[in-house]
Amino acid sequence: MAATDQIDADPTAHPSFPPSAGERPPPGGGAGVRERMPRWLPRAVVLVLALVACFQLGSWAFHQLIGLLVNILIAFFLALAIEPAVAGMAARGMRRGLATFLMFLGVFAATAGFVALLGSMLAGQIVDMVEGFPRYLDSVIGSINSTFHTELSRLEIQDSVLHSDWLQKYVQNSASGVLDVSATVLGGLFRLLTVGLFSFYFAADGPRLRRALCSVLPPAKQSEVLRAWDIAVAKTGGYLYSRGLMALVSGVAHYIVFVVLDVPYAPVLAVWVGLVSQFIPTIGTYLAGALPMLIAFTINPWYALYVLGFVVVYQQFENYVLQPKLTAKTVDIHPAVAFGSVIAGTALLGAVGALIAIPAVATLQAFLGAYVRRYAVVGDEDGEDGEGGDGASGGPGREPGSVVRRPGLRAAAAWSRRVQRPRPR
Image 1 (cartoon, rainbow, N blue to C red):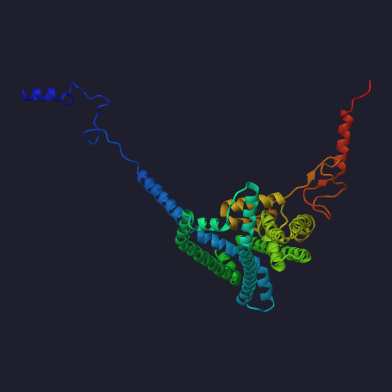
Image 2 (image 1 turned 90 degrees about the vertical axis):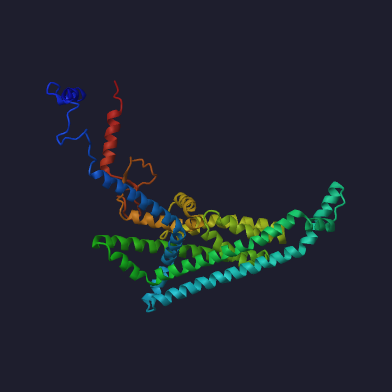
């Protein structure tokens, strides 16, 4: 009886009830089918998690160090800009460290002198405005009273302004913002010191830095790195020196005009126009001409118009005559490319990107031009480019991309026209 009950409880145990295909036990005699995990899956999961963690860590470190990286980039371009002068003095027997120090001393002295002159000019103008403010205010109040038949008084207006709530709140907010201003000034000084130190080391130890970089590269790659380095030095230094020369010419020309018009602070305004118009891309010309116009307007409104007219005329002379001659061998890039590079640099790095965008693009263009192969453009005998004469591209007096004249092409064109010409019946 017990055996029967056991057979009824487990039918698969009886020989007359063979197990089906889906219910066949595993060879090892387990209770059910158990699938094994692939051996590569745990390793793949760990690898993916490690890559994600490394990416997050790198992204966090990059965002934390973005300020330092920008400072190093500025220092690198500044070192490239003074490299030709430092190399020239080193070739005459002077140590590179001393040559770099003298260059930085000259730049610092020029900058400090300009800031001091500009500060004195602004301080003088502020003092004149403060001293003449009551007279201006009386004239404005008199015009309002005569026009609108009111009885306003300067003393009453001053008293209401001094005892107003918004002025007290403004003073309190300004007092609390002194610490923020101080922190900003200290941060700017620390950033300037960082850029100065890095640029000094880059310029003073330029050959050693190049050897250190090339020592970890194979010989085939070393020549490419050295070539790119030389191109960057030539383009960046050429950009700085050409801009400096144009700033000198612009400053002298504007100084003569300011002296003729008897505009005060003529030397400072001339230096301002020369530097701002050349080293601030795109909008530098307008910023440079605004301050002299404002100062001239305080002397005579017609003088402001004269200054505006001279600024416009000189800008056209500089764009079409002076700049092509000075930058033909340094940063000869298309104006549209220069404008686009400035916009892109401003979007990426702000004002710093706008300053280094043009030499960076000029370096990239020169480096690519050394390796990109150019072919002659084949055109018809009329010449779509408006150039005549025979010769191949790249010959004397011909730039790459010009139209090539060949007798075979003329014969082919003549035969094509003869075939397509309708025959008379």
